[in-house]
Length: 243
Ligand SMILES: N[C@@H](CCC(=O)N[C@@H](CS)C(=O)NCC(=O)O)C(=O)O
Image (tube, rainbow, N blue to C red; front, side, top):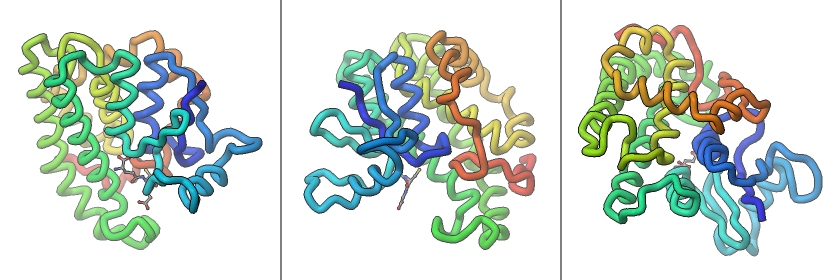
């Protein structure tokens, strides 16, 4: 039976990290909110989240349904899928290393979100622009080098070589790092343009993931929505400051 992925319609958002893993592993899935018909659409997703009967209601999308199991949070979903579909090392030690790396990506994504919504998710960007500018300045100056420098070091220090974040094969962490670089380059083109040379292994990984046949086919498909100013990675020129 196909997995059901629940995520907001019309944007890549956090759901994209899950889609990349499903697409790379060629696993059947239904992107529920993007479908119409019985049990489909955003309405069905909200109904499930508000259900009074469901014993495992998730706090927020994305979440995944596999039969009667509902799994929430990107890192948790990827841990589940990676183990089942060969995108996580076999060793328990490395599985926890991978999970730690993915949770660091979760932290990074939250900080990216806060560059355009530093005060409240329930306010419009336009209502928090001054704070966003201050927050984005600090993010570009301090946090991009901190996070990307860390992931570069992880790749360089992988005993199995710098092509992968963990072990000697592709994992969902590599796919997520690809998405992070894609997103940061979209949101902060000037800032990223001035620092890409500092992260050779990360940039090489990004290029290698983009060339993988299943990922390439996905990126060229209609299922891959473009980045936009409704998603996590937003391009506001006034926030794209050269460090
Ligand atoms: N830690 C969660 C974050 C989930 C999250 O913040 N989802 C957003 C959409 S990208 C949402 O709908 N949040 C609703 C809310 O926080 O009330 C994850 O990594 O999946």
